[in-house]
Amino acid sequence: MHELGYTRSRRQPDHLLLTPDTFVRAALPGMRGCVAVVHASTALGAGFSAYTAEFQSNGELGLALGQRFFYVTAGEVRLETQGKTAHLQERGYAFLPEGFVHRVTSPGVSRIAVIEKTYQPLPSTQPPERIVGSEDAVDASSLDGDPDLRVKCLLPDEVSYDFAVNTMTYQPGAALSRVEMHVMEHGLFMLEGGGIYRLGNDWYPVKSGDFIWMGPWCPQWFGAIGKVPAKYLIYKDWNRHPMGEPVP
Image 1 (cartoon, one colour):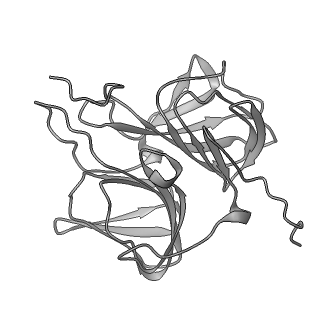
Image 2 (image 1 turned 180 degrees about the vertical axis):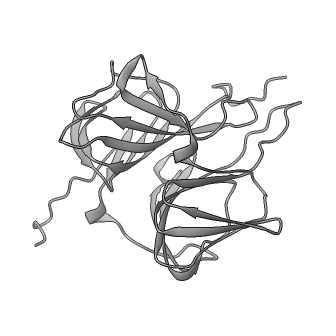
């Protein structure tokens, strides 16, 4: 039953919590048999766009606006690039550079998390390359030496890439070692479990299916609560000067 106007969704100048009860679905240009839930965009003040794409059988994703990263959260999608086809199942992902011709379709009901960003080139730096992979094949490392908090970096830490996408998995009771405040902004898809997120001066219960945007210098902290691990997919802008100017 609807709770008479109540929602956990919140919007503040430096952060956003968007929960599934408030999702609105609409097709983006070029989509067929597919709809999007837009979570973050320039309309919010973000420097990137993030959305969930939901496919019906034989659905197709539209054109990318800038670079595109996507991660399969349910079902299977087909990625066609330069005459090659990759079949990506749950936890599969791909990065497509800006202007890279590709097609994403789904043989059945599927769902992906999508991040798009205009590329910021650097002089004398080669553009990023296409990546197709699976999270399952990526090695995990401990964050700040905590074995109960594991990070998987899905994109290379190389200067040609101007953003990073990681998964972070917290065992029940694990938490960030400090409140973070930094120039990078984040887009975060909660994939599994739940916990408590501090955003700004507010504290929010969060769980699988939620999305969070964090603006630059938004105070942020997370602790996992429950009997199962908490896991999220997180974006941050990276490897560029904070003034936004190319480095000679």
